[in-house]
Length: 153
Image 1 (cartoon, one colour):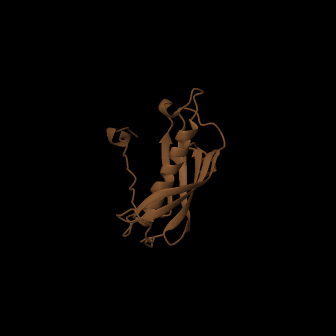
Image 2 (tube, helix red, strand yellow):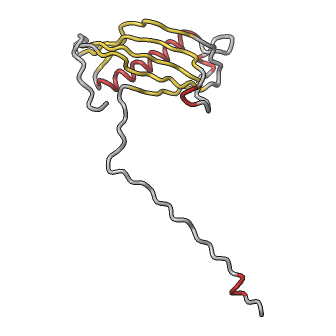
């Protein structure tokens, strides 16, 4: 039996990939927010770790963002109930700040923020910072106004 070039050809079959197409986008919780921050030398103290006032600013920023997202109204911070600087955060770290609305009143709300190193450990990463904040919704005149119910939760 003889050999022919026809027998030596290799046929390549590419797999068919089917993509799932959703008719409606997935619901995004508006009472939670994850903000990732890169710790730069400008945010550090002379030890090369996150300077405490800058840590408070990052926690407060995440709290304000989630409150504004939840209400879709103007919000201002009225108090800090607790701040914990649990471990030093080194320059170059990626910090994932997980903010969540924990209480909603007539015109006020409470927000808890937990900051963890953004590593391969996902939600089980090392907790570095935490804080609890009070915020109120204000109108155009800067006066407290009722919280509008969120459009989706």
